[in-house]
Image (cartoon, rainbow, N blue to C red; front, side):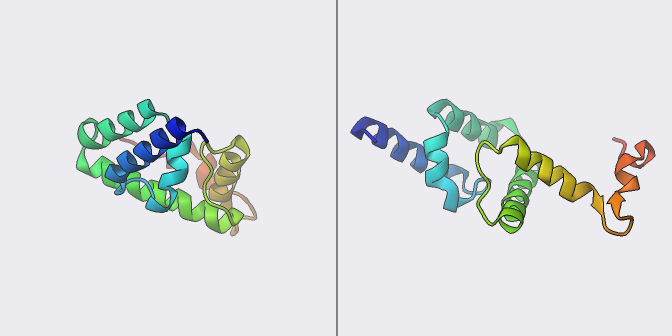
Length: 116
């Protein structure tokens, strides 16, 4: 990695520190290499001004859940961007109902969908 490129990655990593309530700190350096400066600026804006505190907490919780699920089901950290095959695996794991031995009836029943 060139000196200028290395410096910009280090700067992005430091800026990602401001998002430690949302993004896992252990992934900071990896995300700094994957995200652009604009990506980091957008994430910081959304975290600071673009969403409410409850939404921010829900996002942090959801990302933590996805990280843990990926680690347990694949033995590896959640890749970014996540490949389609991993998304399909996540959906399959969450639609499966061992009590039925097939896809959950609740998942297929339009009446079971929460209404807002």
